[in-house]
Structure formats: structure tokens, C-alpha cells
Length: 113
Image (tube, rainbow, N blue to C red; front, side, top):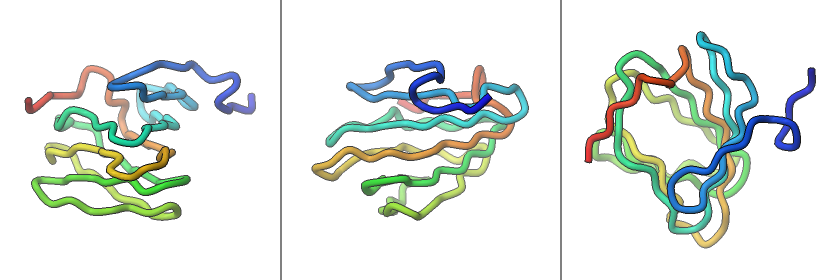
């Protein structure tokens, strides 16, 4: 089956952010996300899951262990397990990105705040 935003499971998170679950497996999860300007997730880490963020459009600001990187469209960033991180959109336009997690992050997240 071809998956896209039109037929994937949709959910809202944070302040007006969207997520579409493109691959919901326990060993590998792929989600497309959209963050509007000024949105941010809660700083957190994953005990087991390794994540890979790939920016489709806009600029994602990713804080990893206290250091922030601006990840432009076409750029990516890996987040190893146990590393505190926070995705933010500090720009004036939506940012869209893919989050690839192995294994799934379901039940693996620990909020820091």
C-alpha cells in the first residue's frame, strides 16, 4: 500500500503540530510531522530508540544536549538513545520533516521538564 498524508493515521501534538504515521511498525516507525512557526516539543530523551530527522521544507532547530543546530531543508540529524533533545521551529514558516525511529518510540520517551 502506498502511504501518504491523505491515508496515514493523523494526530495532533504540542501547539497546533501535526503528525502522520507512515510506517507504524514496532521495529521501525516513520512519521511525517509539521510544526508551525514558534512551536516546540518538550525536551526529552528515548531510552532505546535511535531517531533520524530529515527536513523536507523550512528549517528545523534541534537542540541536542544543550547545543542547537539549524537543520535546513534537505538536511538531516541523528539523535542517539539517551540524548536529551528538543525540536523547535524558530522561523516564520512551517517546517515539515520526517522522523525515522528504530525501534518505535512508543513507550520509550522520558520527558525532561
